[in-house]
Image 1: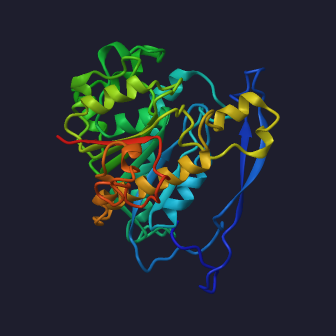
Image 2: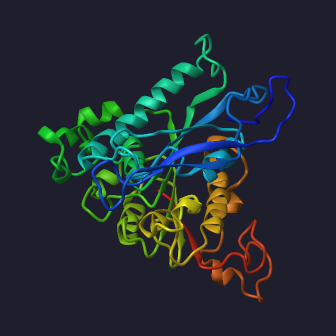
Length: 354
């Protein structure tokens, strides 16, 4: 939520404690469920700042397994910039309760739709909720990490292939997401105006074809590492190239694996290797990738949900390494806008338009 304040209205220190668990559901002996806490920078129960509202809505969908607090570095940052941010804790998909993968495949887009519908109702005038007048659901952005990216893409118009319909879901329940079907068209909410798929899963496994991806018509910012072992880069590139009706960007981290969006590893993981690598990039610094992601996502969402003049932060020379050439010391022919000399290293930013 924007601008935490005390009950008297003055600014107060921003801090809280988040609860999460290590593990991959109750039936994985190699990754037992272990509850833990970690500090954050948002104050629970603070009165929202209504002076600038209503605020665009951001719905955040975590990975499998994951949690609603896996991306707090990002969600807190965006909330501080004037968005109502709602991070979902997906049933059957968290660190503590992860079960059959088919549940995740079916319920991700449905959960996103439910949260959008509910937040729109709570934010409406006269709802009786503290959110009344604060939520502009007509300007909604979806941010999805891994399986959350899969869910965000489907919720935004990228219908699945016929071959995916029977992937483990009883009775072919995934048919409700079949590209071109009336049932799928009825699920789509026109209030979704932009999406940010973070290392989205599915592109390398036949979930979409070119015809289905052509159904994505809202702007998109893809974030991926070229060494991703979970949602392989080639699959994300397939989505990026074939979403031909979307004004889309792709931020690529060289030597980046699947964890480029994740919070830095909490201390409890330091003696638990399998849990540590659930957070930590093997060759990159997660604090840096978090900060870079915040930079570009702020620009992208500001442009498409708030109409802010942030296009110059996105439309940069493709290679960050080339931008640091001493012979090109100034933007736009040199350093990426917003970066110090030599700080824009090991990345690419590419744009494709309809």
